[in-house]
Image 1 (cartoon, rainbow, N blue to C red):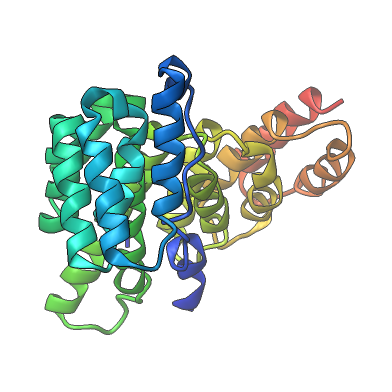
Image 2 (cartoon, rainbow, N blue to C red; image 1 turned 180 degrees about the vertical axis):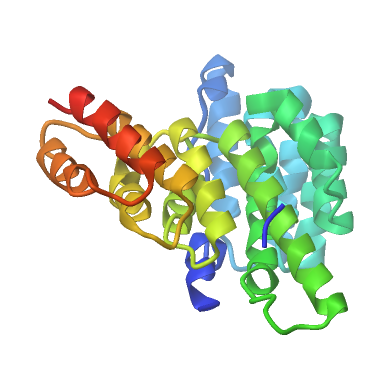
Length: 279
């Protein structure tokens, strides 16, 4: 599907995918003593001692389905560098939600991209595995960002496969975790990617994310750049009205109006359509 290098990494590499996850609404249904236990266990996860973290994960697992709000925390725990903690998190997740456990294991251990359509079908129900998919995306970025010009067939296939897999990750993340701050930042930064196909992918996911208004600058850059196809530029222009607010509308109008006499008819048509909406 998709065809330097450093800029793609700003989309995913360096993401702090182990940032503690805020307590979710599901915790509100728990008894006071269970809430207190959960809070203490989360504090234990900050420990530098692997056995302490492992003990916290194990205790979470003992809560069974009462710990459903901790499923993302447990998925994050499966990426712990300490084997004892990683194993404890996996064992706990299996007790809390076996379906998410199986998906998380397949993604993390086997890099099984067949899980992506399954996660998409679950929609927000698959949100707990978002950190693992983010990690997958991060690992794919270096290869996906390489140029295919002048490379041998084997290398080209590897690069294109990585791009396809990265696109799959992005689409899944936007669907299952549209309010996730890390997902939002990654997609917005990906708008500046040097690979045209990946810029287009990020653009297509902007409407889905919570912080879409922060994508306006990147979207306008795509609209004005001849490095993008007329179709993609027109899509970027048509997206502007849902990204602007009272403060950003004047500049957006100025940028889009400057494209009135663009060589591409598709772009000109999009400008005419959108200028009416930005009055």
